[in-house]
Structure formats: structure tokens, C-alpha cells
Length: 210
Ligand SMILES: [Zn+2]
Image 1 (cartoon, rainbow, N blue to C red):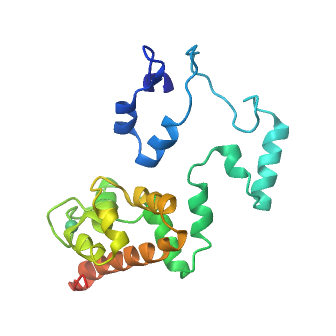
Image 2 (cartoon, rainbow, N blue to C red; image 1 turned 180 degrees about the horizontal axis):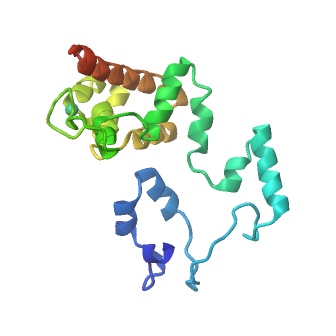
Image 3 (cartoon, helix red, strand yellow; image 1 turned 45 degrees about the horizontal axis):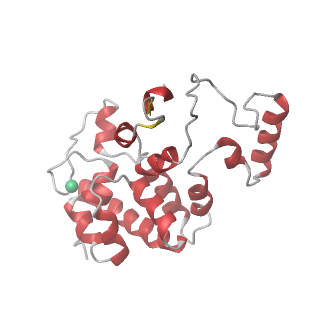
């Protein structure tokens, strides 16, 4: 319930609960939402019009915008990731790296953590350092091999200093604080780290970070 995220005494968000529950970019979005002073009951609202009530006409309009690829779909649906998806497909990168980046942001790469969670019988430790569970975020950002790779790039150093960040958090940070073309080396280097991870598993060859 949304109400469990609000402190009724001060009529504001419980920042500690929100920080513990959501990703950093989601926390920023939530904490910017004003809270009603009258603390009304939770209720479902439709984002498709200003009254918050579902109408077939507004649903038709949203569907039409989606089919036409118009920009205001995201504002209807309140999707905070819309600027990222829009930017991602316009980056000057090979399609394979864009698709990789999309999967990495969605935590959709077949890391060992993911495979073992699906019941696929595999080791779940990182094949590079063998010290930690191999999540997407570990292998791409926080593994000692990845840290060495990112340390060669000034912009990359800022990303690995936040050791609880997910790949999506790092991506959203770049989008908010850097020129968007910085996403091109970021995604390309991440792709190379993942490629090296696959080579290590399948061929037993781990490249030098440099
Ligand atoms: Zn590792």
C-alpha cells in the first residue's frame, strides 16, 4: 500500500523505507511527489486523463499515440524510463550493443544468479573473481575485473564508486548528469566486459582489463 510509505505524523514520505525499497532513480521520483495534507485513503487512478478516471476515449488516444510513436505516451503512463528508451535506440552503436544495454538495464542477461534462480543447475559464483554471487550488476560494475576496466575511464570511476548501484542506476546517472553520447562508451565497455565474462566461461580465457 502506498500509505505504508507515508508518515502520517509529518504527512510526508518515509524516506528511509523508500530508500530501502526502491532504486535510487525511483526514490528521486517518489520523493518529488507532493503528499496531500488531508491524507485520503489509497485508491486506484487512471493516468490517461487529469480526472484520474478511466474512459474508453482516453485509452483509445493512448493506444493511437503508441501506434503512431508519438512522444506524449510516456507522460500519460508516467514512465520515468521513457527518456532512456528513447535515447538508447538513437545512440550511434551496433544493434547488438543496444540490445545488450536494454537487457542489462532490465536485469535480463543470463547471469549465473538468474539461471540458478530459475532452477537451472549451474554454479552461481562469479566466473572471474569466484568470490561473489554473479549478478548482472556484479559482473558489469562491481567485480574486481570490472572495477579495473572502469578505472581506465574518468567517467567510469564515478560509476564504480557507488557499490550498491545497479546497471540501470548507473545508466540513469549518466543520462541525468552527462551528455547522452557518454552512454555510447559506457554501453560498449559494459558489452566488452560481458563478452570477456562469456569467453572466460566457455573458453577459459580472461582478457587483461586494459
Ligand atoms: Zn566477480
